[in-house]
Image 1 (tube, rainbow, N blue to C red):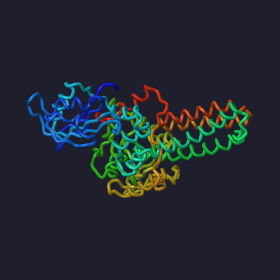
Image 2 (tube, helix red, strand yellow):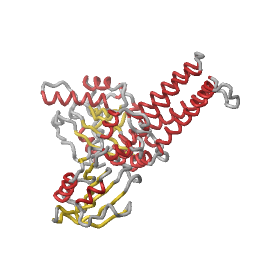
Image 3 (cartoon, rainbow, N blue to C red):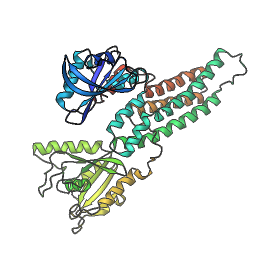
Image 4 (cartoon, helix red, strand yellow):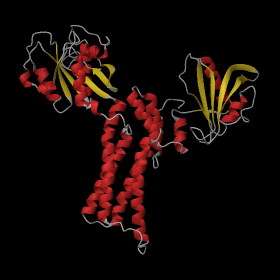
Length: 451
């Protein structure tokens, strides 16, 4: 990280201003080379300075330049931000001058990566930055800000502190047995302390399931045989004519997606091609994709026709979804009923008329009921939300199970200490105290350029 990096931090296009961010040991001196007044090395830190960007003696733009000197910056390096007039030509010209004078174009997420590597933020806080940028609802924004401000990280730090206190006690008992004023850590005491830590980890994991829903939303696949009203239902839920609707079976050949919000939770809707046996090559590809989406979704809405008897294709679909979260949506409720519901689970039935927009609120309430959306705790949004962190937390829980088994098998305390150190290290991986370089590179590559 010896070089100085630069990137455009605002969306490139026509706008009032663009911000170009520079970070590194030579940030101030490089920017100073392309300013008219040449005074940035003399100004106080955390000030905004009026100047001109020049190329030789030619004026390029009138700008405001923020100078922030290390270590009290986002990256803990010298940081300069140039606020120039918005527009592709002007912004690119300023960027070109900075690159010509010694900067390197930053990689995606490199500013945040430097903040992490320089100890400014931990991994949970870094991931929170990305979640904050991508948040689509007020709840997901609140969730992300709790990660950014360190509230979520503190949960993990508190657990590690509890473990390090136990480890320190064990080490003193082993190395200095003559110290009688130090309490001896027995297997019974260890069991009690471990059970307390286990309980706290389980609580975090349970909350994190809600956090995953808040962050990523719920993926809902609309399935059924052709011409049962899947596209019409999608349009009703979206309150928009996004999907093409005709009386011709097989109109939907590919997936049509849309998003709605239910009680502040994102619901990702996927209208799939009608599932049936077909010799049409294009339709067959759509059918196979529909089956894949059905298998990988969080919830399946199986549409059936109220004015038709169940056929073999309906029965096969009911069998395919029996082990999944599903709702049976009986459409065309405005027509005479011919469907035999005695073969269906009535607790999962919702009647609608997509044509008349009836029953849609009841369907939304059913989705809320299945995922307990009205019970998701929104006053304390200190959850872990990504698969990486949750995976390490589950591994920690498995290691604690091994410790408890060891206690039950009367293993000596110094052997149990090995598993306890493993728990401490696993929790450290969540906040980035320990990490693999490849994982860090992959994580920050998902950020946008300039962040």
